[in-house]
Image (tube, rainbow, N blue to C red; front, side):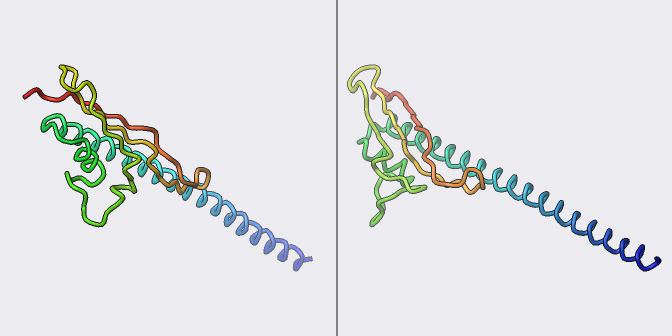
Length: 147
């Protein structure tokens, strides 16, 4: 009879250890998914804000200097007024088709540069959102300074 109660005690102890391990795995998976989700949202915000800042700076440069729209496009893509030798894609994989620069109402008091960045890609790693997505369009506009 004594052996029987001792073996039941050992079985209970093993069951408790197994339950604790299972609970630890669930908590760890939840925590890991949460951390990856926070990383993804941070990456998405960083990418969007960097592109917004690039578009604003390029608009400002074009408005003050009244330069060719290609120069403004280069500022968005490469951070400089010219295209670096051998480069076809800019920051975060931007291509010329993703960056549109127009100059509206030329010669009037409403003369302005408009920069639009569209279809830029970003990658999500979260288990529930994993995949490649395109960001919503970013539009920056600034009126030119009259000489």
